[in-house]
Length: 287
Image: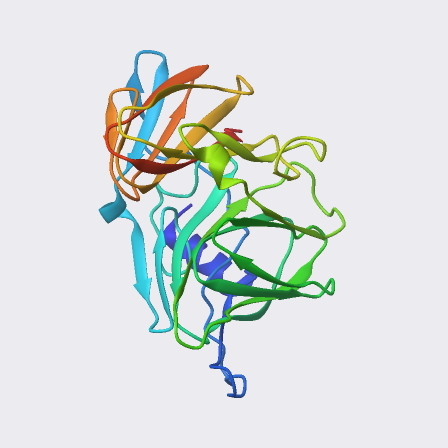
């Protein structure tokens, strides 16, 4: 997609995220548009290693925007950050690393036909939506919302004196115009210790939350030296590794804090924590 088409989609066909006022203030007359959810996914520039293919996204190569109330890093093209080679990784369309100031947040805004996952890293994030849900999500929680036929929601920092940090992740669904739904779970962080805890899958009967996509997410908190093999669930899928903290080796590639690596055309991947590390693995369809 060319930049002109990207900006056109951003301005005319987007469902944006809008800045919320500070607590006690009225809504601004001209809301600030920050996002969209109607662009195709692309694995981007590919590096071939035998049959396995990889794409490396170093932390300092991500898009960045500081809106004052929101300091955010984009692993893939989003809002004013546009890179034609960073339009997503298969069904993984958005991976935003957000820091929201005290008492601020994303005001009421719409989404449709997108699976939206939030993973808090610190602080308290309050969620409200048009389905009647009002919830508080904190570190150790995971939230999912299927936008489907359309939903309005808002996300605000509940604290008056502390920032909130969280990952905002969007997956393209494998089924459109489903009934909107919301779910939230508390994770057993003890099960992440030198392990991969499944936190998302395609099945309501499986561990973690579920989504309308053949995707599996895992979280791990590993001591230095821990090694583990990740076996892909589906041959058609790719794996996007995102290092939350520390350092790991994925195959032969060393990944530091906030680095991302996409891997596909393989059935398994060797992982090792070279330092104490927290990692997020996202297995998604590539087509």
